[in-house]
Length: 515
Image (cartoon, rainbow, N blue to C red; front, side, top):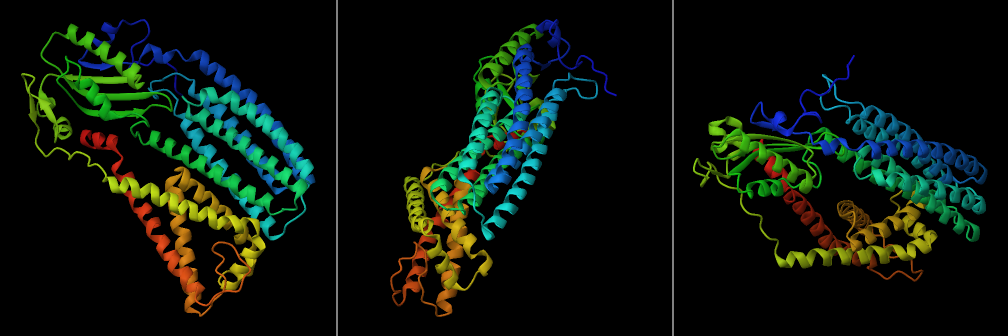
């Protein structure tokens, strides 16, 4: 049993700064300002409770309406909303656990319970995704009439309820991964309810029953994107990675710019929770009385909090370059310039890391040009196929590659996927996924065309919709050449994107040097 006690490793509010720092040249600070979150956190708990109540009523109404209206999109939205109800309950429990203070066993408190709750919420969301995909695919294969008027009415309830829930939680989403996960659930619900509302309006006037399961799959894409965002951030916190948005190079440069500091090395930064940032480093200063270093430490702590939002700094003071031969310090100083006893900079053993090279101007032009070209091609290719999915289904059938059971699903889903990829490429959003999907689709199209040419087929390729005109001899060969040419800018984007992502890790370089 963990008895709750004052944390013996942090100064209390009643201790003066000098008393807290006097015993050793290692300054460990837990800023008083970091304890002044009581009122906002109480409000956060109240908002979570209200949102939980609201999200129990919404899915109940949606399930009843979805069963009566035969709308899988409405039932899918209800399943997602009910998973959000469970997620909100988990978030509230984790919030209450996280409010417990530090103990002898858990000296940092229980704030990381919220991170574990966020991971559990991801598991729930993935379960909801599998449920939605199963029913959407079944509805593609066996379409049913959908009552558009009832779908509109029930979806409108979801829009109002989910919009209010998202509004209540957005204030706390910036400083808590747990609340942010709940907020993303609510935003996902709001957008999916809007999509279902649009679906109902369309079904009132047009018998596009395939639109209902298609919107369900789009909902799945949005859910998975949010799951990945929460999963990567939670994993980074549990792995003690450098907090997102914190540039250790900037912190190091700022500290070394202070006149009282000769050098800084062995830097580490990590999240104690989704909002608290801990930081430690070795600071080289001239020989001086301890009372002078106390004033310096107070000033450094204040700057770290104000400039970098670091609320838990640990500073180890040293008067000799690189810790006077300490193994860890020597490793972190390798390749860096450190001061000698007189304050002059000297080169440490090892070669300094090479400065980052500027990308050639030609590449800066080619990359957006390739994105715009591919984006325009994909959008143009999707246009006619979206308007006439039956003609595109006939074109797919002519290839004699896919089984008959998936031709209709492919004819409906593929054009919308092309449209989304094209829009993402042009707008410059979701680039890794868009570029990967563009390459995957082009490789698949090229392989299908090559197979058709090898088999002697000369049919309408359906690449840009079916024109209905007679197919000219050699058209498949020309289509194959065209797709191979389109692969050139697509592969170029894939290669340059991977290279740029590999180069863009300055914080990792500092951490590696400090390890």
